[in-house]
Length: 335
Image (cartoon, rainbow, N blue to C red):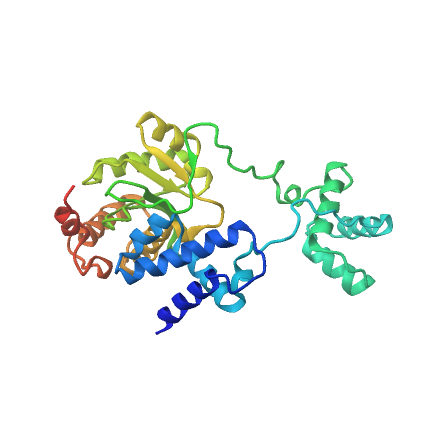
């Protein structure tokens, strides 16, 4: 009933009942909404519909929600703010106060200083404005950047894509085993105060996972792990996705380039796009290390971990695969 009501409402609006003038974009959105419900009436598959309409499911239903609440006006562009808005200037006396607070508390950032200004001096300044002032103070050498006090001579640099790696684009998904293999590392406390670095590689299609432990997580060990993955994988590795960690730069990136492996780097703070390997971290931690009673010696962990991973891939039922094993699921794929 709800679908029929929405469809009738769309037809009603498009027949000229609303006499207000709207932008061409509004009617383009309305047309896509109408086409969506028309195709749904013909029992078309939703994936096909969104592909034909060249729009995501989330976007269409956001339009639908706004249309139900506001009519055609809800389909206008939501953000009407100008791209280049004038910045509010901070008074010189406030800048001097920010300098004074920062010198007294050299580790504090813009958020804390904003609170102090408002609480102690009754001065209301935005966090962004305080941040701009601090940046100017750092550039003019009046204060030091906070990372200086943590023993680093320079700020951690953002990754520059000037070699082999490429930026991961939203919506990228693996279609075949070996595509966009998810690789990441985690820290495991094996004994009190003793840690190992575990690298995991997971195929998002088959859930087939390969793991290995190292003493350190460097680009060298990451490249050694990738060579290990290639040797252990039942399918050819074609492309890889990783986060922006330094262990996936340098030697690791060079190895991918030399072996014709496409390398994609996820946006910062986006573990949800590496969900399969993040999940494997937890599974291995709770199913293997919770029962492991050996030492943190790599020579002792590795054979036991290899035995567990063999069981994980070829014996353990996986609910996400319809309770098949990754190995059996892979064998049934028509590739």
